[in-house]
Structures are given as structure tokens and as C-alpha cells.
Length: 178
Image (cartoon, rainbow, N blue to C red):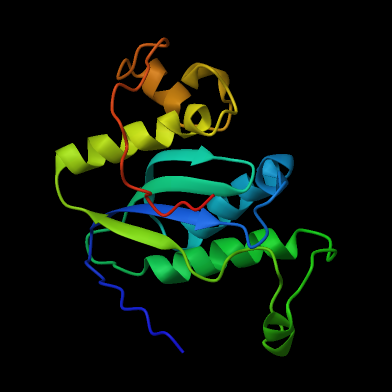
């Protein structure tokens, strides 16, 4: 059994990648976008945090969270969010034997990618990555055309122009696997 070591820093800003268990040919997240929004609201009301940037893709999501100054528990938040979303879906997914033994659903990958953001440059780089993701995956030709993204909020705030294109070559996987 592999043991993953996570670092917990109160009040930190984190970049996350969270994937569905069955990514191939799945559109579960955008098909159930309202349920996913409810899950975020549910968790934020119980264990507050700030969403700085987010993109919801058909089978994975990326986001940046800022936790409260005295709080470092992002794992419980993800557990609550995944659970809320999963309970709202019909039980028709494939469930592996190991998940059956643990009485788990087969919706989400058990683990997620977490990266501590340590500078404003790091935050800006990851915000760009998040917003460029739909173009990177060929879902749209222009960032503004993807509806499930905080990019629209950034445009309203004057941070990005509506015609923004990423000029950076992202050579890091940022927790994604094809």
C-alpha cells in the first residue's frame, strides 16, 4: 500500500486537480453541473474557503482555493464535496471490487493532485493554466467560449480581456493524465 504524504499549511492557497474514476468518454461533471455547484455551496457553508479560480471539464476539474487563516483541512472539504455530488447521482456506474469492499461509489478517483502555491507568480501561472484548459483539451477554440470557468468573472473584473489567449507553454502535467 502506498502512503501519500500531504503537507498542511493553515491559510494557504492550493491548486487542485480532481478527476473522475472513469475519465474516458465521460461528461458527468458538466452534465450534472448544478449538482456540482450545490456540492460546492454545501461544503463552503460548512467549512468555508475561497475559490480563486476554477474550471469544470467534462471528466475533471481544476481549482485554486484559499483556506481560512487558521485552517489547513482541504482533504475533509474534498471528501464532503465528492460525497455530496456522488449521493446526488443514480447508482449506475461501474464499481470495482476494492470499492465494493469499502462500500464506495465509483464516481471519483480516490486521490487528487494538490499543489501549494507559494508566490503570486505561482498563483497567476496556475490561474492561466485553469482558464486555458478547455482550449488545451480541444473543447473550444477560445477561452471565452467555455461556460464552466471562472474566466468570465475575471473578464468582468477587468483582469483578462475577453479575447485573452495563453502565450505560455505549460510543460507540467498539473495532475492531469490523458
